[in-house]
Length: 605
Image (tube, rainbow, N blue to C red; front, side, top):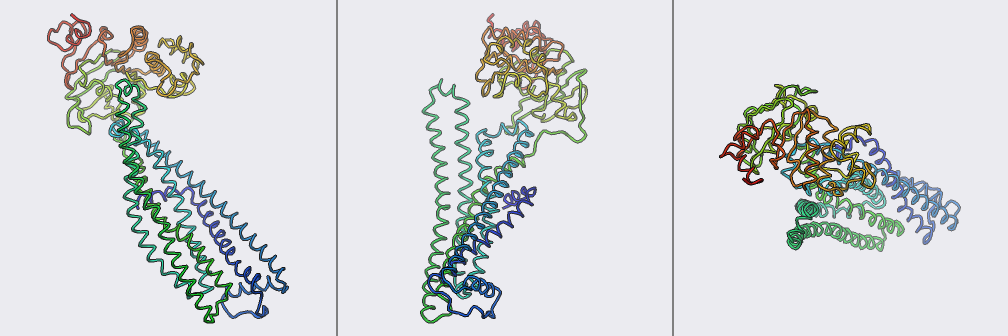
């Protein structure tokens, strides 16, 4: 229940609204009870009339005095038709105010509910963007999206339970019980025998619901991930004719979700009918007992007995609703756990105490005995890397797939932290530089281009505000992108689609280069920026990259070796270690070196 109480704490900013909501519940309960009680004078008016002297004030409790005052006002003319009109006016007024306060309270509760889930999603997203890439590499995207949507929606039901059922229903129950007790304390005590049975039922069903609700959310995350993978990998699925396989895989996950959902639904559905059955059994017993009392000359008047029955049967609805509170809380328990798992996640990469800003890059980047391995594996991806990159130097990194090339450059902006060793910029350990300031030093262009479902202009100016139009156009021209941009439907205002699907690979690459040019960072990281492109696109992009690297420190991961022949130095990585360093001429003359073998594989002898 710890997560449940944490959710309640999130409602602290809305406590004044909740107090007002509680007041509205009290007014609603009063008029609800009044609307039921008025059935007694109505029945008396229609069927019995007044057989007592209304001038005699009873020596009873406050309720008796209040009832006598009401009867005196209703029947003071002694005319049943006049009394009927008064009762009808009172009934309409009671129902009007009952529904008026119900509307106000319901609207207020909805406002608090929607505000809470909005705050919850905001907290999740804020934490989401503070977590390192390691967190997302270890989780499925579909599962994370499911937490933002399905789990948060499940939490909304918990809020409704807390401030509708946990408060409203007990107030209604107490109000009806007081009225019933004042009419007949003996019958009211008899009616309480169902309470132990209801409690036992609630505990049993609650445990089952908690168990299956966790399974439901886990299964939902599984099949959501399959959907996400099919959207992202649609081209590959069709190319390899795996549609049937994916359908079967989805069907398995969907059936698992269906089974978990049905088991949860069965226990949810059992709750209300079982509680109602117990309540109806009690009601039938009360009818029998009270009828026997009336037949034997009980002081309970027939209209009071009918009014008592109406109150008792009205009592069943809040008791049934209250009996499902535990079940609904248990259902949302799994969602709360999954949500707080994100909110409580601790960023493994953050500013260290005393970290400072760094505005300029002046001298060099140095890797000192850097070792790295992923948390999920003991295998070293990088092993004892020692490297010094000077300002305005172009350094290329080559090697076989899996040699650790991309990982090496990912360590520079601290997408991951080194396992041991250190990386220094101008002699300062990058861990002692504020993350935002550190990442401002880098412009990054990768093989897999990330574009957002927005305009071309917004993608070029991403991360920057109030950029003059001439600077955007200048960056696009230097990236060889201006010409094709102007040929699009709306020029720079053309929306590129999700992941930039409306653009070709070469066009997306040039937009990314324009974005890097506009950022104008002193250090450029180019991660296989020209791989998998046609000859014309490669030529345009290579030309744009040369402009991008001009007067900057550049670290280039190259798949096509023809693009790095002019690099100042080429670092050859072998199994996470630096094998050899040299320029193109030196490495191509190394008969036994990997670089020469790679070059010959691409261009022949």
